[in-house]
Structures are given as structure tokens and as C-alpha cells.
Image (cartoon, rainbow, N blue to C red):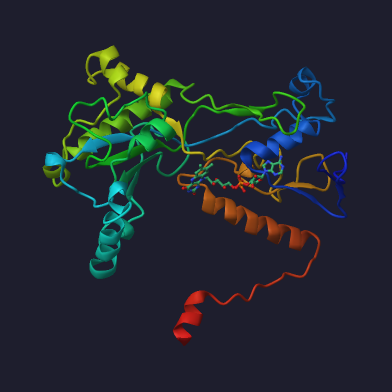
Length: 346
Ligand SMILES: Cc1cc2nc3c(=O)[nH]c(=O)nc-3n(C[C@H](O)[C@H](O)[C@H](O)COP(=O)(O)OP(=O)(O)OC[C@H]3O[C@@H](n4cnc5c(N)ncnc54)[C@H](O)[C@@H]3O)c2cc1C
């Protein structure tokens, strides 16, 4: 049952002397384990893979953050954030943006466009401590590329609004559920290692998640009615026309439930598919498979109340420390001089 290496393809096999480190992310790592015959027996056999070890938790317990976007237009189409992306394109837009930034410290180049964020606990938070809602504040109204490309709003979402156009001014609130009660899973569709796995996120499987989602959307509507935002933006968000046609207005909880189910999106923060306590131990070693370790976002016992990239890097650092300790290796200290030090010399 010991991990001894990795088959990259038919011609290329890598043999390991110590640990095999699985680090393909919360989707890729469970996929590789499943392809290797480590996972729920029935599921593996149903796609024609011989089960080497029945491991019912592999690929299960997936958590994620799910968000929707509410676009508010500014009163009188006033520029409230100076970060409309059209302003930085071509000439003279790019020239003026550069001028604004260099001489006034203002404009699109002074902003990441993700200008603020609010964390809070809803009235019915799950048991995890910490905030369960995040509302991102973007001083950019988003364009058709965002709404129709990334968020999959129906065709011409912005162009069909009578008085609106793609580069109209405004801002976005991005309310996000940080601790869904529902859990997703990663399974195999086929034995082909190059085929995408099946991802079943099961968002909104749990009605309490819907209730928290509706509450967070209503909180956004409350926020824009407060001074000083109320002086700058129209309090009604621009909503997808198909939703308005279907429900008549956006008053009801049914409207917002439908909005969440139709338009909420993953923030691409999957975690916990090989979580500590179920698939790996506290030193990230896979239970029952000597010499196999997982070091990536899939080991998180639960998703955290914030973005997952920095914690994944931290997991990488910690995983390295664990390997160094377990094999009594010499820690390699990196003596990299940060650029600031070189600049101070100038
Ligand atoms: C579109 C997008 C936007 C995001 N934005 C943010 C953000 O703004 N802030 C934030 O904090 N987080 C963000 N995240 C999440 C963040 O990127 C992840 O949480 C983090 O990268 C997870 O790190 P990881 O090491 O677990 O996996 P990854 O970074 O995904 O690394 C896994 C690696 O394994 C490789 N791999 C997978 N399968 C195989 C295979 N079979 N064979 C060989 N290699 C394989 C992949 O190509 C990848 O290089 C975003 C993610 C996405 C997808």
C-alpha cells in the first residue's frame, strides 16, 4: 500500500525515495487519488477503476465561496470611482490615466478596483467562528465582459437596459457566502487522466444557505441607501431583465432566491476535498498509505472566512516544514534580498 512514485505517462515514470507529494489543488489532487484507485470503492468500480483502498472521504466535503454581483449606477452617470476600464484604454485615455496617477495619485491606476471589503456575521451563522458574509466593494461598475463573460448573465444584460450602456458609471457590491452548509464533491467521469473530473458543488442544497444569501443581498440594498452612498448612487441595482420579467419586481424573497440560484457564482475557492481528519492526518500524511502526503488547499479542515490563495501558500510552507522535520533534513534558508534593499542603495 506504499506510495512509490508517479506515472506521468506511459513512457515517463518517477520513482520516489521518500514521500510522494500530491499538490494538484482541491480538484486535481482528489482526481489523481481516485485515478490511482484510492477512493470510494463503488464509485471507482462504476468507472472501471480497481479500488486499491476503499477511502470514502476522498473527493467529498468540498467547500467553496459563492458570490453574486449587484451593479448600482451612479446618479447623473457621475464618475464615483474613476476606475471605469474604458478610461485607461488607447489614446488619450491611457495617457490621462497615467498623468492622473503620476501627478495626482488618482484614477484607475491608483486602484485595484477592489477597493474595500466588509466582513460580518449574519443573523444565522453556521457553527464556524468568524464572519460568514463578505461584501466586496468595487469602484468599477463592471462591463459586459464581466457580466456576460464571467458571471454568465443573459445576452446583452447591460445593453438592454434602456438608459445604460457598457461604460456607464457606477459601482459593484459583491456579496459572498463564506461558510455554506452544503457540501460538494469531486468524482471521476472516466479513467482518462486528461479528462476533467465531475465537480458537483451542490450550492444551495441547504435552505439555510438560501436564507443567509437573501439576507446578505438585502443588506447590500440597505448599505446603498445610507449616506454618503445614497447621495451618489441609485438605490435600485441593475437586475437581469429575465428575472424582472419573471417575477414582476424584486420585492419578494422568491425573487432573490431565484437570483441566487440563477446568477450566483463560485469565487473559485474550492477546499477540503482531502481534508485533515478524514483523508490526511495533522502532518498531511494520507491515512493508510505510507509515503503519500497532500499539500494544497484540499487539506483544509474547513474553508476559511477569506480568500484562499495566501492560506494555500501557507499550507505549502508548513508542509515543507513538516517534511523537513519528519526526515530530519537540513532547512534551506533563502537569503533573498528584497528589491527595496537594492533600491535603498540607489
Ligand atoms: C479564476 C480564479 C481566481 C482566483 N482568485 C483568487 C483571488 O483573487 N484571491 C485568492 O486568494 N484566491 C483566488 N483564487 C483561489 C486560489 O488560486 C486557490 O485557492 C489556490 O491557488 C489554491 O492553491 P493550491 O496549491 O491548492 O492549488 P493550485 O494553485 O490550483 O495548484 C495546483 C496545480 O496543480 C496542477 N495540476 C492539477 N492537476 C494536475 C495533474 N493531473 N497533473 C499535473 N498537474 C496538475 C495545476 O495545473 C496547478 O498548477 C482564484 C482561483 C481561480 C481559479
